[in-house]
Image 1 (spheres, one colour):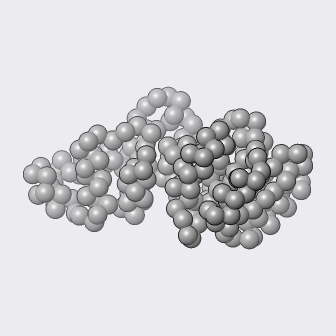
Image 2 (cartoon, one colour):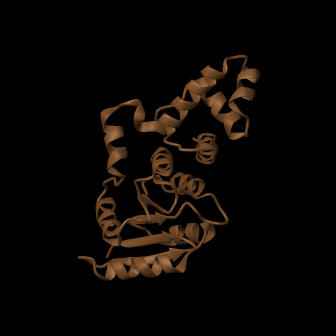
Image 3 (cartoon, one colour):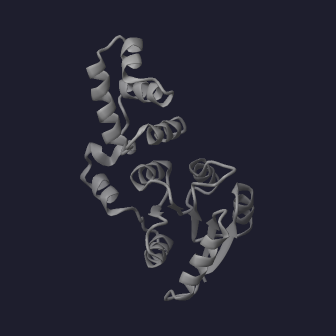
Length: 206
């Protein structure tokens, strides 16, 4: 019987997934952990077909936990299941080594479908991200490295500097900064400075 590990600090998520699994075509065993310590303890005791990880954990950065899991268990499929912004965090999850990503706004039957695909060695990401990755274009965002200048500018933006301040610091025009900023937003999928700061944080660990 395939075994799943849910890493999420909200008990209702476990209840909802357990109810959905009862209606699935086959039986599953669902274990749960509320934090990284419990998760690593479970992983040391059992072999899991899939880990379902919420990246919005209160005590630890979920994407950092993902990388930690994969360092210890490189072949472990991990599905990111979160309420965080899909366009940004699906890219980050893919770059960090996740096998799939589903936003918590999706129907439960979509989640169970992902369990089936991932437990058989497949991948499960939003269709738009799969299309971006397949066509090899720059739109696969964070998996296509930013240029050195873009990395420099995203760092300054994440620190709260304005376009004009960055232009003065780098001795370039304000228009040039704006162009770099547009390219950074397009490549990463970020929609605002808050999301851009999250992208920059993850880039520091890739």
